[in-house]
Length: 96
Picture: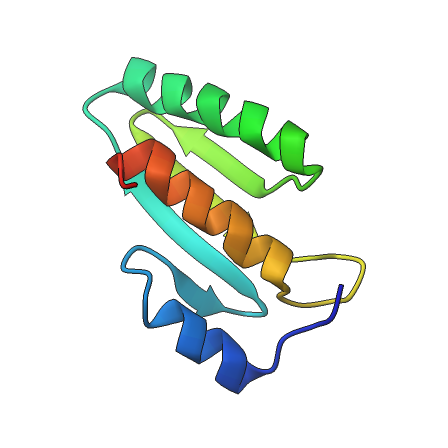
């Protein structure tokens, strides 16, 4: 995997509403109706992460899920991060 430049990252982020580039990672904070909805969504995302072999840094407090993606092996953002972010958006927002 090749590390993306800041220009490439910004270009790709322009097509994604819920993600930001912060301190070398893609980040989002998602809010749900309650803890059960947040945790259920986390579980669905976890199965996809396992399939992709790419695991986020994340936390859940009550109805909020914070997700941080980067590729540790290259010390930055790669296509792998954007692929997982896109799938997370589909799971959360039902796109596609």
